[in-house]
Image (cartoon, rainbow, N blue to C red; front, side, top):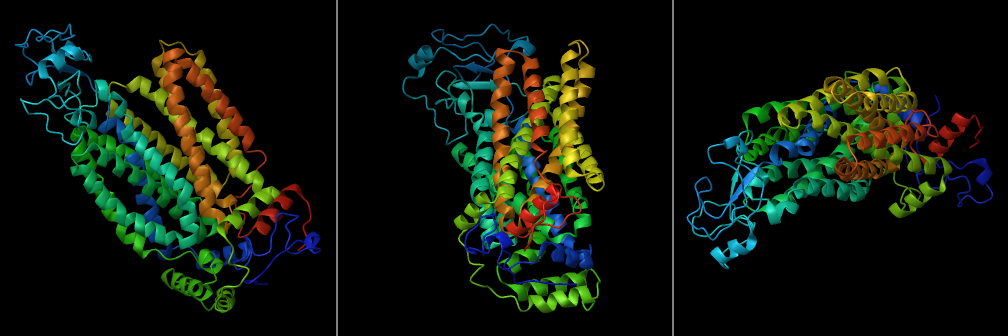
Length: 585
């Protein structure tokens, strides 16, 4: 077996100028020091699957759970609740001040019609309280009978507590003039995810996947506790931003690490951790029935945050990343430890040869390349440009479809948010299970392209079903969501397999950014289309996105049972094999 660890591959056509990049393969950039893809996969196959990978898998499971909890908690922590405004601290009794105009037609004896969701005449309220009314959000004590702390047109607010005892909205009276602040609870989490998608990949590729994960694990627990007990709304928003940043960056980092340490035949099995995403949503829906106040529910998120810390520190470094950084001896030590934990003899020829060669790997001048230089080399490579162009389109379409189908499902269960959360969780869990089974035997491109087209077909059928048959429509929507969930999990694995090692985390974050763009796009579009046009317009939009998503899969190469690319040269060779073009090196 030929083993080559310190190498510089330049295609034969580039011999006239080895420092140029006519074929998208530059000297030192994405090349330099690294385990060749096929050799690395043989080594990992020899090491096998066992105790060495367990901390990595446990970390991914817990990161997935935390990510799903914070991503999906808004319907239970910050729902839109019915309210009634009053000029006094006793909202259920007639006001002793006739000068205040209470805009309500509700009857005190009719509790079901008591909450009219209307604000008072601000001028009359100002005449009553003068300059004492404050809009401060720094205190949540609204039981003071002397100075009201509600919005100007709603000094005292009475909320319908039939379903929720306390929410973020009722805690800080986010109604009337403060109504525009309510979406910030979810929006700041999304902004944090966007921020991490811009910088997180660079940090992971520069300092290592394990470093990023350990720091994130240490940040999540105190952030959860601070969110539970804070009395400041601005501080809660900052903590939500921090949640979004840490959960997203740790998710990309740990998934990258999983792909790099699992044998190729078990990468699809590693998707089993994605079951925790749906399972966590199901658990939150169940706990939501018992804990109807947002603070106890937030406190329950400390459980996975505490459990995450030990496996995050028990994980090993990625051997591929270590060799890429010129730390061959450390990579050899990691593989020796892996062989020992998995009860594999390290003296067998395939491992002994690799470990000996790794000890000779040191950092070379070709390996030290600026991050911006690597990005430019990626953009010059035709095969890499194709990946960077079409994988974001897949991510955008899938996230919009995931949120859009969930939004459609919510239209049937909006009166019971816990049931809605449970349905989404069950659908996500089944979809993740299907992804595990199908990815072991079905090509990624076939699974994604076929899934997109099947979703488009179901959405067209939904448009033809009578509105009176709401049960049939609901089943079709949930079936669409299940297929989208299956494709979603496949696309994450597919993206990581497409990217070369030196760019894998940054590439994953780059694609993740477009997932978030798709989420924001569908969030705004769904509300606008539903109000201005009708529910059917959302389905038409989703159908178009599904068809376009199936077309974006076509130009991409297949990755199932293929070695992970380490360099741009590997990307070029893989593309040439797909097109049956000979490549000489």
